[in-house]
Image 1 (spheres, rainbow, N blue to C red):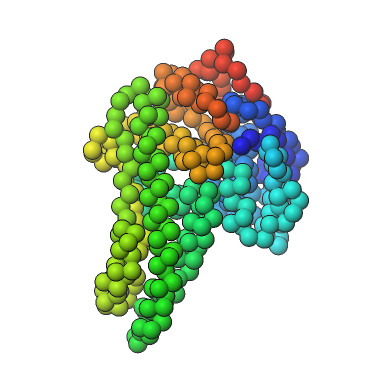
Image 2 (cartoon, helix red, strand yellow):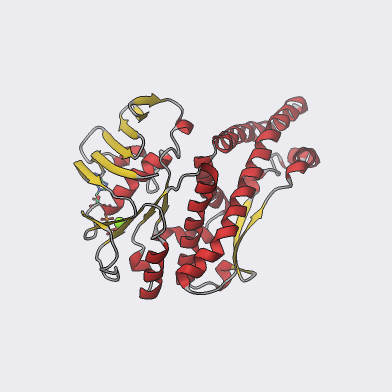
Length: 343
Ligand SMILES: Nc1ncnc2c1ncn2[C@@H]1O[C@H](COP(=O)(O)OP(=O)(O)OP(=O)(O)O)[C@@H](O)[C@H]1O
Ligand SMILES: [Mg+2]
């Protein structure tokens, strides 16, 4: 997968601007506040149909304008997103896409930004949200299971709040939840298996340190125990008036040498773990779609020491497209080939 060009109209600080990318390494170079991250944000908007900086699409529209347009040319398709007063409109090759799930992940970009290290200390809910985005981008079944499960969960919690609970309706909801829960556990389990297969090797390549990094999937139950677990927890649910069991309580824990990562890792080690995690996600996407996604690295160079920066640049010399933002070219080997885009 390659992004060849992105054209921005009224997106953040851009009125009518175009940026071209080459395969392999691209560097967006410019001083603070010039709009480097905004360009990555436009690509993530095409990838995920959402920004990573705001929940309100209208914030993305250039000040004093009433619409925005992003046109993104990949090696195979043209993706377009328009936000105006009527909402968000998505197109692939000029054909309107009604269901967001049919647009998400079609052009798959994986982003690393410095604040991502917060992942380790965030709430399980936020971690699940982030993991779900990555899995959902490559599996429509997973995305649909999450959407349907969340709707059923809302219904279930509403029902459980009532004084006289209609148990027939409750059983019906549980029954409809089963295939979705199975799909969710299956998806998360496979994701973690692939991540664990690659993460150590990437960590070693970036840091030069041989540590045992692992993600543990704390799941609500085993796949073949879903129906039973729902039944077992029914009484408790009714007593506490809320759904106590299900994948909405799952969590993921990062480990380093059999310790919780947060309890032993330095800031730099957390950063490198997270970069290794993102690189492992690239492999996961490839494993699922046979296409390499595009890696976006925001401000990464300022986050690493010289040696680790050099090692990272070696790793991302592999066969995929990378777009990096930076305020300077310090530490970028002049012998290395890259496409420089001044912002
Ligand atoms: N809706 C908007 N309309 C106009 N300008 C906007 C809008 N949203 C953000 N901006 C401008 O975009 C700029 C920030 O862009 P961006 O975050 O991409 O900078 P950057 O080049 O990544 O900087 P840094 O190196 O500090 O990370 C700011 O000047 C901000 O005022
Ligand atoms: Mg920035």
